[in-house]
Every structure is written in C-alpha cells, then in structure tokens.
Length: 105
Image (cartoon, rainbow, N blue to C red; front, side):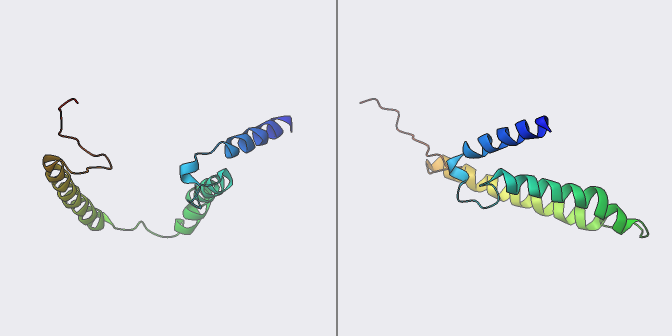
C-alpha cells in the first residue's frame, strides 16, 4: 500500500505542475483524464475487442486502407507545397515567421 500512496502523491504533484498551455484542453488538463483514457483504451483493446471478435471472421479492409493512404499522400503533398510557397514569400510558416531581412541596425 505504501507504493500506491507514494505513486498517488507523485501523480498529484505532477498534476499541479502541468503545462499551463494545456489548461484549456479538457482531456489534457488533468492526469486523471489521461489515465482514464489509457485505461479505457487498454480495456477495449485487450478485453472487449477480442471478446467481440471471438466468433467473427476478420474484416476485409485492405481497399479502405489503400484509399486512406493515398488520401494522406495527396494531402501531405498539398500541405508541403503550400508551406514551400509561403516560405519562399517570407510569410509565416508552421507557426514561425521567416525574417528575410538580414541587415543589422
């Protein structure tokens, strides 16, 4: 029980030292939500999912995955092209402003 008490105290300490930039995000604002989501995922992945699929044949999703992958490639190419164009113009890219002015005052 001492181990659980120490772990709980460390978690509470970490929870108070969280990044203030994530305070407005409801799922990331607290470690309790994060651990609850991880526990839910593990329950579904390790218990509920296998029990649900025990008497079923596997889904055929090869075509869906191919279409998804192709869509991701097209979207990535489009986004990279836009970023490259903005970078050449000296505009803000990926959240950072590119300053082409190299003169020192």
